[in-house]
Length: 295
Image 1 (cartoon, rainbow, N blue to C red):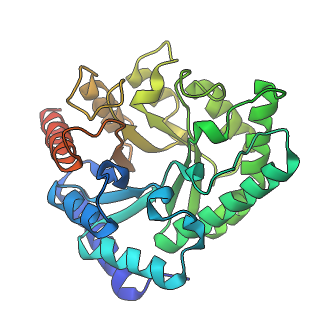
Image 2 (image 1 turned 30 degrees about the horizontal axis):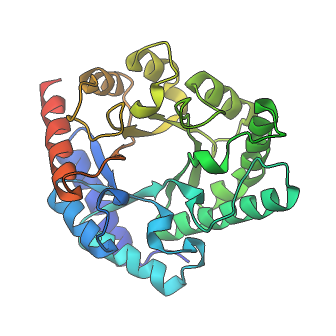
Image 3 (image 1 turned 30 degrees about the vertical axis):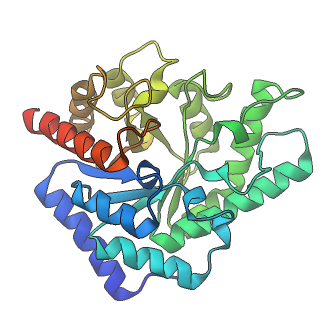
């Protein structure tokens, strides 16, 4: 299923406007607007000054990959109607329950990777982009599985799905997670090594400020070193609050993104939602645009 001509044109217009008016293509995760329906989240994101929307599939229902063609089309229309481009999916395996991609249970692994494939199709049907494999609870090396075995199973699963992702115009983005969130892929070097071992253009990675807790080098060094594989960026404070609520040096990261001529989306992803999604989104966008203007 492909977007209609009008939806495609509206989406391209949103991207073109973002590029023309701002150097940074700024998106926000719809999870930010907890308690709001999808249409309201889109309205609030656009009103706060964002150009794109990143979606957590679990916010779309208990079985997001089961959304009908009509439901997917309606989601596209809703985003386009607010001038938002679809950026991609994240927190992929939070729903339905029971998924795990590195478990020693071969049956659960097979079912989980089969569901992952369906999420690739969902991403493609919403407009293409990237699928971010964070999902710490669904990828951790559990009892009976070594870290090396877990990483190997992630690598093999992504490699198997890469041709399908490429065919659907989707990029698979295994995410480095902070050590307190996951026990596998906790540094950019480890994640990039896995990406390079797969050696497929549909498997790349992303940079997330919050998930640099296990790194020993600053953001600008990491961004420059791994630039050729970075296809998406998440911005948040180290404690998960929105940019500007703490003391993270976002100017350092944004300056490095400009230096490497990063062309992709930058998404605000938060894990603390007070006082409200609307306030958080607005404050984060204004803060990041002020930094950008001063670079």
